[in-house]
Image 1 (cartoon, rainbow, N blue to C red):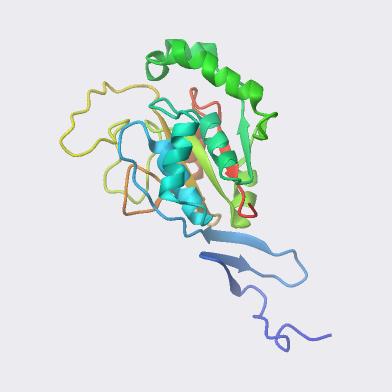
Image 2 (cartoon, rainbow, N blue to C red; image 1 turned 90 degrees about the horizontal axis):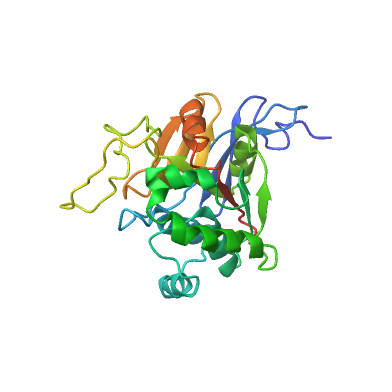
Amino acid sequence: MKSPREAGEPPPGIEKTFLYGSTSFVFYSHWGVSTTVDCIQLKVPVIQQLYHWDCGLACSRMVLQYLNHLDNDEFQKAIQELRLTKSIWTIDLAYLMRHFGVKHKFCTQTLGVDKGYKNQSFYRKHFDTEENRVNQLFAQAKACKVLVEKCTVTVQDIQNHLSQGHVAIVLVNAVLLLCDLCSSPVKYCCFLPIGQKCFCRNPDYQGHFIVLCGYNKASGSIYYNNPAYADRTCCTSISNFEEARTSYGTDEDILFIYTDS
């Protein structure tokens, strides 16, 4: 049996880098112990949203491009066929992934619409018209081969998923999410084109989709693409990420996307 040195392997504790398509994996190897991924940052393209309401569509485009599934004409056609308008829920994004044949799993705390959201300013405007539509999508999910599961997701679950080169779209409360790398935080729902005025009044909740693309266990950080920006990958602490993704209004929605699609 060859020693690590004879086999051309690095000595214990030395990092190894593996390439997966456009993805770079960094493994920290300790011989005799299962290899674990301590730090990873996936090369997910950054695509900026065009309006204040299409962050979920921008995230979907990022994911599809990462998987080499993105065709702009087909994407626009899919939006029309699925009737995706200015009120987009996580279940809509799951149906969109299914439309493109992308392996996925939508994890949530609520199978349907939480009636308590009717009193939230973020949901109030479209609640009455959206409640039946969204509940129907949940009811038809199994028949449409859209995988939805009511479950609790841990940070470890997310890290394990990312360590395999997979990505995820997460619903967060943008009011709480703070990037450690940005000089100034994005203000609530103000992801508007230059020249358009925002009329926000410090809401308690502002739903926003982001794409998870990595983590660093040593620093306790999560990397993500924020469609509010076109030129960066953001980073926040695990504690801040957890606060933003478990805030009331998110249902702890996570859409896991798999590369073996």
